[in-house]
Image 1: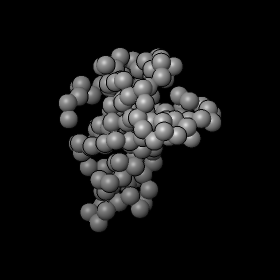
Image 2: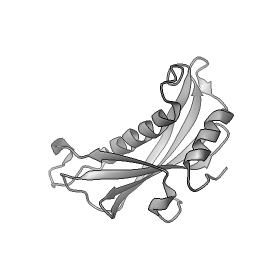
Image 3: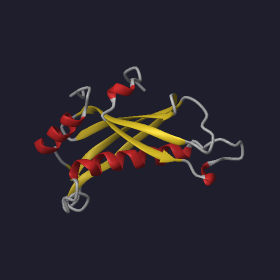
Length: 147
């Protein structure tokens, strides 16, 4: 996974997720599959905050996940609150690359990388990301996404 050095100041959006008792595996640490759910929580909160209550989003158009990977950096034990910084690292013509940095306090525990595609749900195919959406993403990001 190619990425910039993890620096909290690179993330313009933060989302906290509390672990649950059921997130643990038999070894006593948060199971690796839960990090994908943590990323989903942060990603949907990031984009939900951009569109507000636009009824067309998620019904006529929006984003669809194409790929998600995770680098596990350190074990995470329950109970914990995972602080997730989410940013758009690349902004293409119809897709975006997300990067999620997950922290337990000051300790980095995981980094996710996703590809999400702007999708026309009526036509059932990818579409060009609208300029208004690009502008909202660019306004939020402290480090400009690659294009």
